[in-house]
Length: 268
Image (cartoon, rainbow, N blue to C red):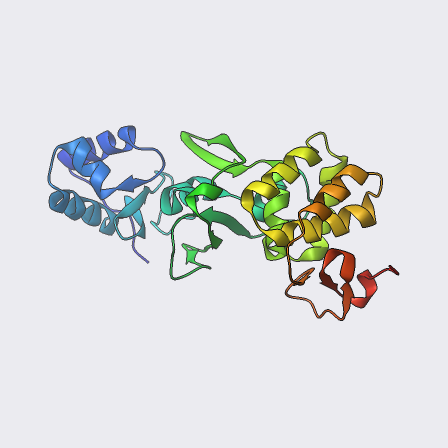
């Protein structure tokens, strides 16, 4: 494991200028712009400082500063959301990570869910010990977000209604349908509950499976929401889908065109 070694006066001056001019992470382009040097020279400087232990490489061309109190450059990220914003932008924090932020769950998830317009080869990267779950979305699906500040970095997170819609679109984003349902019920009881907005988001997203799952869950857990249930029924698309693609299903709820596990089915 490398140890941190000293920097000369000129290097300290340059590194200080870069740290003042960046937000959490440092790219080759930013360093080049700040120091008024070529990208090649900037890349060499950042690489040299990383070898000396003052910077830690996140991925090619991206670095973070090693805290002064650290005796090694092998340091964890201070804020995973800020790192996600830098690595996967345009993006937003979604799924269970957003549900945790909005107090829709008490579960603790070790992986950060990121909804991104990028198309990475690795959808489950582990970077410096931090795990991410990446889901690719279209640019037109970048809606229903709230900005939050993480230090000096502004990060987007799905608002409560968009969080639920995303998890109904893909229950894996909520850790499976059982935990997704728990978050959905907490949403219904929360001050952020807005079924009209949720349905509006579902229409905008354009995934028919959302209405099949949402209508089924509303009918089962919030039967008083009759107008919303009827609206979901009016939006049903052809074909049958599974309540959770990860579960074994053997019962078809025909009115919702939804395959569910036997324990979830009720008499029509």
